[in-house]
Length: 212
Image 1: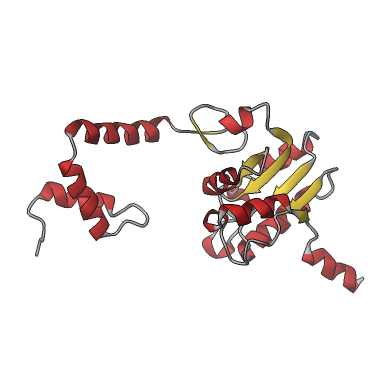
Image 2 (image 1 turned 60 degrees about the vertical axis):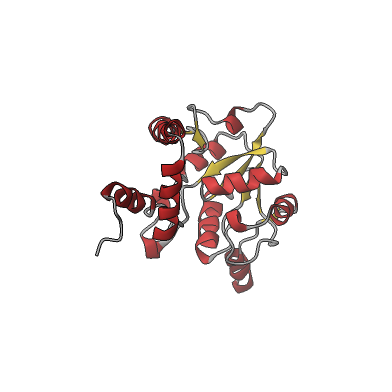
């Protein structure tokens, strides 16, 4: 039995409920709220969403969301372009930027290696990272991926690809708990993890050394 007295309301609720973290009850509350708003405010919201979706770009350098071909971070001459912080997605950039403790630039992989999900190295923005490093203008690579098996696997893969270049490879301090994602880590903890980053020494290589 249909509990909605309006098909228009039902359709709106169903569309809003497709958004992450929005269930049917929340979608209904949002829909009823929009009904109470002035038409001009609802139109402004609709236009903003449509314009964002149609005009949003991805930075050609770091793959961050941007209004232009190069994002504001990469275009900022005050940032240290010799330091690259590798992150999984755009939300991690936002989390680190909120700490105000990092002044380098970023490289967004667009995910992490996960064979269970069918995601391999070729599905990520890894080749472009290697090309950046090969140009010789990078002094440090910071591995700031989720402290999960998939995150560690991705770090190890990238490490093997760039370890022979003349640069420092570091990882954020393990103040971020094992299994945590960066976007859910509080700003103070994440900021300290960036500041107190440590040299990356692969556990695989430690094991190999013991076997020799």
